Image (cartoon, rainbow, N blue to C red; front, top):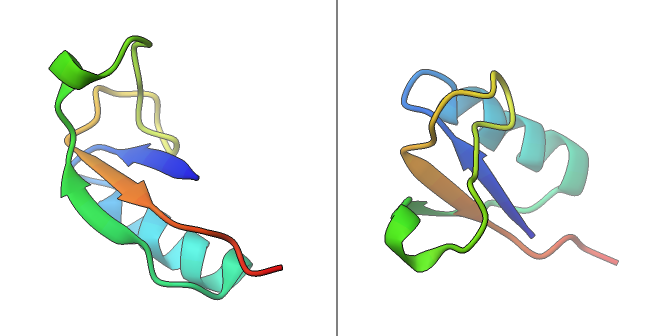
Length: 58
């Protein structure tokens, strides 16, 4: 899964992923040039700065 985060909310989203899925996400800079869809911060809807990549535990 990939969640997107703005600068302000990246810590909140990391906590949400760890609390909900019990895994630590990989944090990478978001580059819109590599994405077809327009992404937004999962917390507030602003333009993302980071993408958090993780595999939920089964």
